[in-house]
Length: 133
Image 1 (tube, rainbow, N blue to C red):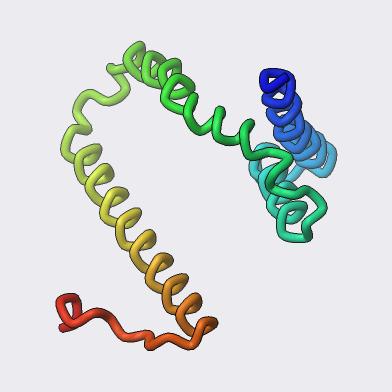
Image 2 (image 1 turned 90 degrees about the vertical axis):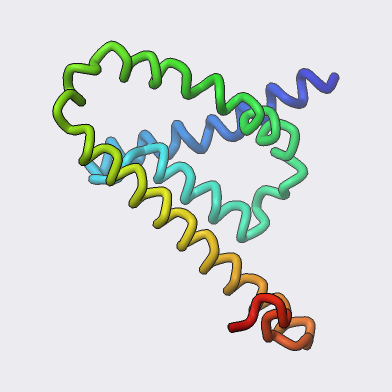
């Protein structure tokens, strides 16, 4: 029974992908159909059209399977290494820059969410002493 529920939840997530792809194709949007589907899914969750319990096991399964989904892309990159020759420094700088940007944005968003949560609950919003400047 759990397997059937898992399949149905993954199918529900896939339906949003296919709807997003159809919308993107029909309206000739410059945005990928998967992104459109993701935005539709986000709206459905925020409007509580779809409760999170309807997709919890399916989404956990997909997140756990994510590393396996990157293997084909990695193999594809290995088949085209000649495209990267001579761009070593640029690739390293891009990797460093994207890592730093990800850390900065993640920290900023986390800080804002914690601050917002504390304001809701009426707690003091300052940083602990060991982290203050």
